[in-house]
Image 1: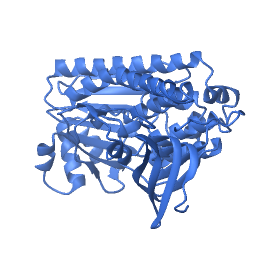
Image 2: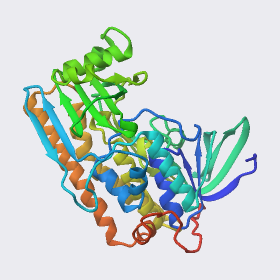
Image 3: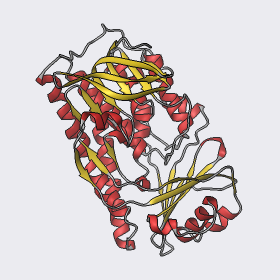
Image 4: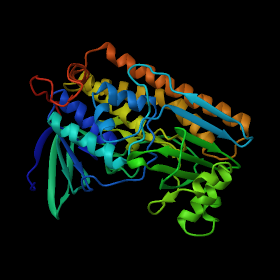
Length: 415
């Protein structure tokens, strides 16, 4: 790439779950899509791993679930809730809409899978490109500027999509307003363990602390512990020792199991961040994933939200192809639907993230979270009422679901 501006229908900043999925869907629909990411291919990232039903449903609908399974991601067919009172609630997943199990892939697996699918669909993906600014003409975003190996990069596009996470350059440069900001948040530590038996997804809620056992790739279990930041900061020892202490508080009955397991690497941490809901779009730009919406990771719903919003945005882009009020109105619809489906998740997560629960309130909030997740699944299934190009492809060739639907290249007028 050089200083001369290249031209695309859509430029996506960020090649993680939200960005790669958005690029894949738009490329399958025939748009010319470029994805730019500042990192390197296959790099890991901080993550809660667990996909909920909505996330698995999306991968199934797009024909990508067999790839996730082939990568050795173990199926999870039960969720177990452990309460401070000692009560244990086991919920077996009921097969529905093509989903008979949940999955918790490592990000080195899921992100790569989605990037590969985007490339197969016709999108271009370039790593090592740091986007530093937006191109703007007459008040409308018309692309991005950045650096690659110290050389300037300029890309013009009808739509610029920010999928660049909580510190989104696109959101900052576009001046995206914050519609809502939370106040409660906790600090999380996690690591991977060998030799830890689990009964599916296991969630533990103890004395102002939480923990989880999440089966993931290579026979390992992601073990996390969380509490408010001050409490985590007051724990003694190295990060793995502090993680064991958190698990002992949140899950005293599970601590012996963990003591018999072996951690395979260092513990990773997330110090906590208040949730937010940002303006989802403006003239020539849109946000998806954590760039537009973030809530405390205790919900373990971030990846599922990212996949959901990728399709909601793609639907809006196709509905609004053209120029002027039509495109803006369609993106208004994206923002409204994103916000509608997120409100229940946000409210329940905000209460959970305060770590000040009584057990009766905790159960209520978990039911609210479950209800919001069910609403999300129903909304995604309703999208099948229209034959979107990526849906047709997944149905006709589930083993591949990769080639773009034959149709003329479409353009979004940036004027």
